[in-house]
Image: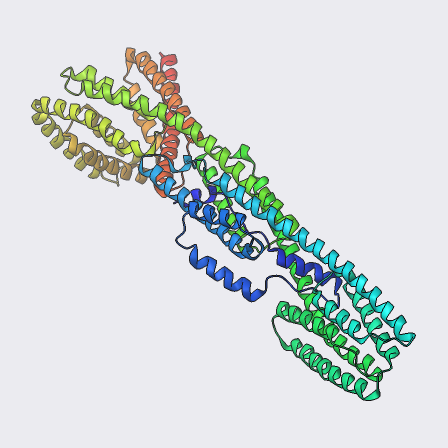
Length: 621
């Protein structure tokens, strides 16, 4: 597929995973504790690798079937990575289908620039199941929040029970069994709303410490319990401090949350060590939290920069002035610009999640608008090309009908007129151009070859004329340069008159002989310092001096020639205004047309001067 069609294929981007959004929100608050993430990095990587391997050979219908299975299952959350991978694979396969359709379209004779993909019947069921999965995931998140709220209410109830146990202990009736049951129940509660986690933990620790203080257990039991708890918390501090050396910021942050859970579930230490132990653990946590926050702040910064770049690319496409795109070359240049912009877009990373989808939709809409306008332009051009094709086919049929004619003069004039009409007709579709031209020229050549054979009786005369003209050329070359200029000019004029009065020579020798003749004359004129137009006018002035009554007829003839040249110049200028090309061969053709037009303008001026010379001669008479 060409670069142009690649550019017309709609772009697709993946959404940023929800896990990143959760991490981002956590970074902005830098809480001391965070609830466990449902799906770990390791599980996500394994699942993504499994999805990529399993979907390499999957068809788009199989992808839809798998999405349906996921949507109807109870494992929607844990299939998030697989769902995103299936989404990417679905659009990649769609892109390949479009590329194949385009290739077949071109092979069937279609114009590549006019290709429009067929509607995608699978896109609607694909979007339906993706939407269903998204809704189920939202329901799951809602259920998780409700569960956290229920856990929060349960913890409030346990705090009330602890308060009652403390009051009983103060009255001399400690209930250690109930106290241990409350601890076990509290430990089973894994997470509560993030905004309440720290507050609930501090209240719980306060109640536990109050109970221990009131309980007045024997010194031996308290010291043993404090010592065991201290060993656990020192180990947790060491593990938290070691996380500072882990290069994976996200993994360090998640492991820290696990250490926090274990730290708060561990009982108290001796009162004189409580503050120092907690401060050590908190300082290690601060280092990890700071790295985590800086990571996401840098990520936000990069995403905002990416958003600015993507907005700039959208504006670059939106600012294209369609009014200036009036030729093939202009549209091709603009298409290359779009392709370059799309390449740059792919190299830019994600923008912030809330803006990423919107800016992509804006970019895709701008690209679609461009290619829609381009398609409309080429449809209009195609219509004009087809009209020209019909006209040139009609000329081919006329030429083919005349190629066997033996009315040499009238047929030759008719074919010559057809050749002029051919030049005036604009371009045709490129795939027909060469064959159509060969057909037309073939018919014309066949007629003129037959005419030349019929005129073979003139060959002897042409050979005699060839001999005479070669002698004239030799005589011109032999003009003595030491003679006065007027004598050289007189001799040159005599040989020129003799040349003009000599008849035709063989056609194959004509161009070569004339070039040799012009070269000999130009050498004399250059020696006499006379330019080409002055030579023509000098020869013409000598000829009309003997014109007599034929001057009026010559004047009318020159006026007709001058008018024809003006019309031909206007035709060239009009055609050059509409033609454009994007390859060296086409550019060379335009250069030839421009050169011909300039030569016509120069010749027209010479004709006009000849007319003035005749009018001067007529006035003298």
